[in-house]
Image 1 (spheres, rainbow, N blue to C red):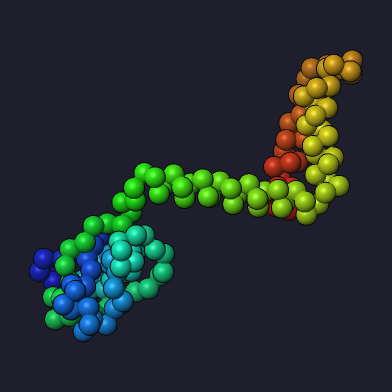
Image 2 (cartoon, helix red, strand yellow):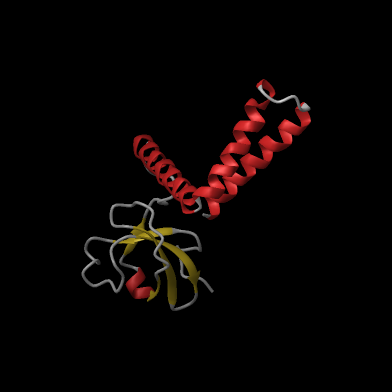
Length: 151
């Protein structure tokens, strides 16, 4: 039997009046379980309503749950400017990690990069078939990707 007015996947937060008495931290919670006497909550947002991944699970009794109010789902509620800034930061971090992976094995990275250059520009100085140059190019690209990702 479920608690009246609450269903799994609802999003709630403690009201400002109940925050002092609440056994959970301020934030946004997703209802993940409901039974006759308790409601189980997963913390999915901070006090400002931004998405967090804490893994915090709390079970509150129905009397305590009465001190919660509906809240917006924190997934996808960020302004476009902030999403773009975070995306750019993520791209920069991933690029730095990729370069660090290449620098972890500089000799192999140089060989892989040389294969890319030969495969791409080799037709200017080598008299080999185009398919051979294509194979060398892709072998070099795979080498660079592997080394950048695995270090």
